[in-house]
Image 1 (cartoon, rainbow, N blue to C red):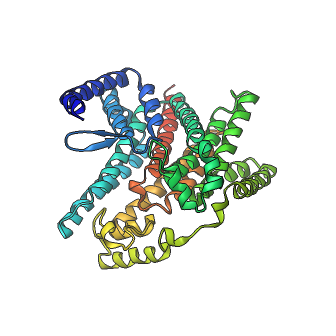
Image 2: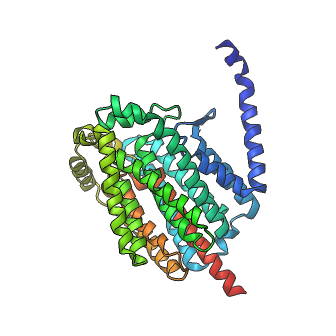
Amino acid sequence: MYWYSDIIPILAPLALLLMGLFFILFVKYPRLALFLYICTLPLFEVYISLSFARMRLDDMLAVLGLLAAVSRHGLRPITSLDQRSRNLLKIYVFNIVLLCISAAYGYILYSRLNVYDTGRMLGNFVKTMFLVLTIRDRDDFVFVLKTYVVIFFITGIYYYIPITRQLQWEIDSRYQAKRTLGARDMGINANTYGYYLSIGIMFTLLLRDQLHDSLSRSRVFILWGIFAFFTVILASLFFRAALIAAMVVFVYRQVSRQKAGLIFGVMILIIAAMSSANYIFQYLQTFDVSDIGNRSQRFIEGIMAWREHPIFGHGFGQEYWLISHSTSHNSISASLCETGLIGFGFMLTTLVTLLVNLKDVVNKHEPLKLPFALGIGLLVLMSPTPSMWIDKTSMLLMGILLTYIVVCRREEQSRGNS
C-alpha cells in the first residue's frame, strides 16, 4: 500500500505521456486507432481514472482517435460530402444538442443531473464521430468488420467455453448464469455481450457480402463457422432481442437472394442450437420475469410520467428517479418520458432518415444490399434498451451504418469526378 502511494504522483504524468504517444501514433496510423478501439469493446469495466472523472478504455481511445482525425484532416471529410449525407449528420448532431439541452432542462426542474447517462450519451456521440472521420474508404470499412468479427470470436471462446461445465452442473437459473459470466476478470455484462454478439453475426454476413468476389472457399467456411458459433452462444443464453435482430438480418439476406433452402436450414439450426443448449444448460426453462421486474408495468409508468410533461418531458436522464424499477427499459417510453414529443419526434426523424439513406445507397451498390437489413436490425436491437442514446451497442451499430452511408457517398463522388 505504501509503495503504491509513493508512485501515485508519477502515474498521472506517465498516463499523460502515454496518451500523447497514442495520439501521435493515431495521427500517423488511423487503422491502429480503429483496431485498438474495437479490441477494447469487450473490456466493459476497464477504466482510465483521471483527477476529475474516469472513462472507459474504449471511450478514451475514441477521444484520442477523434482528436487525431480532426488534427489530420479537420472536418473536411464531412464538409466535402454531398448535401443528403450532411443533412443526415446534421440531424444526428442536432439530436445530441437537443439531449444536452433536455438534460439542462431536467436540472432546472428537479435540481439533479443524471451524470452517468449524460456522459454515456456524449461518449457514444464521440465514438460515432470517430468512426465517421476515421473510416475513409471501403478498405477501412472492411478492416473494421474483420477486426470486430475476430475479436468477438476470440473473446467468445475466452468468456463462454471455460464456464460451460460450471454452468452445466452448478447453475440452475438463467440470471445466475449471467452473473457467473460477470465473474470473469473483465467484469463482462452478459446482456451487453449478447448484443455485441448479435452485431457480430450481422457483421459476419456483411463481411461475407463485402468480400464476395475475393473470398476462397475455406474462408467462406470459416465465416459460416463463426456465424454458427455466435448463434449457439446467443441461443444458449437466450438473448431474445439480440437473437431476433441477428436472425432478421440473416433471413433478409437469404430472401434477397431467393435462397429459401438456407432460410429453412437456419431455422433448423436455431432449433437444434436451442435444443442442445437446453440439454447442456438446464437453466433455460427457469426464466422468471420477476427477476427484471414487470416490463409492461414499467412501460406504463414511463407513459404516465410522460403525460405530466408531454411536450418537453422531464429532462434527459430523469427517468431513473421517476420509475419504480429505475427505468422503463424501453426506448419509446424513455424518450417520451425524458424528452417529450419534441425529443421523440427528432429520434424518429433520425431513424427514418437513416433508413431512407440506407435504402438509397444499397440500391446503387451491388451486392451490398444487406446494410438496409442492419438498419431494421437496429430497430429490433434498440427496442428493449433503456434509451437508444445511452446504449453502447445500439449506437455502435448506428455509427457503423452512418459510416457506411458516408463511404458509399464518397465513392459516388469519386466516380462522378472521374
